Each structure stands twice: as C-alpha cells, then as structure tokens.
Length: 298
Length: 133
Image 1 (tube, rainbow over the protein chains, first blue to last red):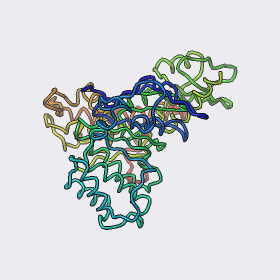
Image 2 (tube, each protein chain N blue to C red):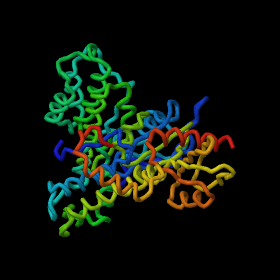
Image 3 (cartoon, rainbow over the protein chains, first blue to last red):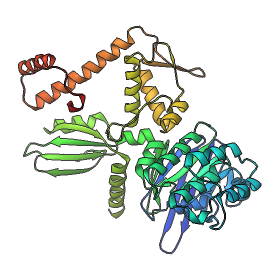
Image 4 (cartoon, rainbow over the protein chains, first blue to last red):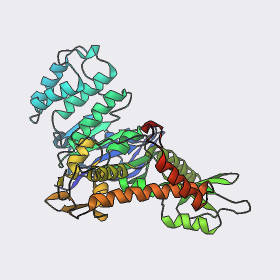
C-alpha cells in the first residue's frame, strides 16, 4: 500500500461549459485536506472523479491505492462518502438505515453508532421525513462514520448548518484523526472550518488548482503590510507582493510569499512599515482568487 | 475538553501561536511543571479540534525556544531547565514593555514621559479587568 490516501495526476474532464484542467492532488495518509473554491470551481467534479461517479477523460486517479474508476468496487469498502444530494429513504427510520448499512459493511461499529446518535442528538426511531436539514446531514454522516472507513470523502459537510451542528460535526471529524491511519478529504466554502481542521489546503478555481500545500506553510506565506508612504515616494513593485492599495499616505500591500526582507525593502524606499499582519484563510481565499484571475487575463 | 485550552476566533494571531501561548501560560502558572510529560501532538489536536499540523507547528516552535523537549517514540515533556517559569514570566513582561514602548513612540512620547506613566500605572489600584487593554 502506498502512503497516499489520494493521488490525482493530470486528471481532466471536459464538459460543454466547464473544464476540469489537469488536476494534480496528493493527500498523505493520516491527514485532513480541505478543498476550497467558489461555487462552480470544480470541487464536486473532483470529488465525483475520486469516487468513480464521474469518469475522467484523461489522467490517473488513485484512492487508497485503487485505480479509479476501474477498481471502485474494491475501493469503496474503505471509503465513506457523504454529499448533499445523497438521498435517504424518507419513509424509513434512521434505525432502518443503520441496519441496512450494517448488513453490507462488516466494519460497522454498533457501539460507535450509539455514541454518535447521542452526540448528534438523533433518535433512531424517527423517520427521515420528519428530520430537519441539520438532522439529515448528521444522519448521513452517522451512517458513514459508524463504518470507520479508512478514508472519508465529504462534499460540503457543514454547509447550511447552524453553529452547534457545525461544531458537532467538526468534533467528529477531528476525533477520526486520533487514528493516524485514517484520512479525510472535505470540500467547503466555509474557510473557517477548513482553517481550523485541515492539515493541507487545496484551492481550486475555474477548474484549475491554484495552490495545494501544507496549511501552516501556506498561511505563513501570506501577510498584509500596512505602510505609511511620505508624499513624493513611489512604492516599488517587489517580488512576493501581489497587490498594493494606496490612498493618500496610507498603503496596504498584500504578500503571498512573505519574507522579513520585504519590510526592509519598503523601509529603504523611505516608507514606514506600521504593521505586518497575518491573514485569515477567508482573506487569503479572496485575494488569491482575484490575483489568479488577473494572471489568467494578463 | 480534557486540557481546557480555548482558542479564540477574535484573536487575529494564527492558531499555533495561541496554542504556544497557552502552553507557556500553563507552565508559567505552575500547572505544568518542569520535566512533566505533555499530551502527544495528535492527542492535543483531537482535544482542541484543530489540525495535527497546527499543533505540530506549535510544538516545533516551543522546542526551538527550549520550552519543551521531544524524544521520538517517547513523546514530549516540559523542559527540565531550572528557572523556566521565571524565564517565561520575564518573556511576557518583555513583550508588554516592547509593545508599550512602540505605542508610546507612535504617540510621540519622550522616554521620560513613558517612565512617568509607568510609575503612575504602578500606583494605580487594580482596575476592573474587563476595562483593561
């Protein structure tokens, strides 16, 4: 077995109005990857290819060492997949669904299922019909988590949930990480969730991967520099700075490859560096997407 | 939560810095003593509900500062250096002083004025905590 839970190389898929363009992606075993992108960026298509639900036109996809889509039957024993459009049977109870999954998957852990019922505040005897959106999401996740799969693939697991439900789900996802043999890939446009629990971050925009790397290293590269610029001084273009906004004597420079020398370089021009700030993933997300779209245009 | 760390969303600093600070505080107040084993990276990540890599970063930086030591296969411990508590307190004071000096400079205060203000602050009865900062 390889040390990669997921490996995509040069994966492309062409639709009439959308192209997924030579996607390369690696998720080492034991890690959580957050897949971030705007609506329609290609997150779900990527996930569907991983699950063998959509067949790529070219490129190779390996999941837990299995080639997808060819070996999807073998791969799926060890993968837990949940997405928004996954349907549970409305007229059946949660208990019925639990028994159904249990009859298929030998890895079903009944004690863990009971624990999840309690933690999620769900009742097994309730029919799906009467559940709220949050309860449905939690039910679907319970069915996946109780199987203890080696890899969890979750498409927007926290979208549309209230803060308490979101918190409950993040807690279960980080709990999975107590076992270093298990991995998670999840997509989200909630950057706060991704920032909190991911080991790796992958940015996807318009069918292309903009960045994919270690979260700490990634957050560390981005900074906002607040500058005081005396009149008569023009700020130079510096490598690692992707944008400068200036109004009067105050300027804000955004760096995507920050090194302390950048501040010195500004100081040498006569500008004064007032503050150097870290950026949240949300701020990075917006700056990065705008920057990469400008680059495409140029 | 087992170790009752609290990470703040309104704190603008990265999470690994917050984790470092809370570990330092724990040592500074004597909750974690010199030489004591501390949770494994993965364990603390699960308890804090943050990524393993974030806690790994915090431990790595703490190790570089000589505050904890990690032996592979044996986990991490608070460094057995004597005077670690005092050193952490000292470091905390230094940070506050640097910050105060910087703000004073931004306000155009002379060193003498800052000194007077420091004296004054020492004479003030402790205010309600919520009003500080």
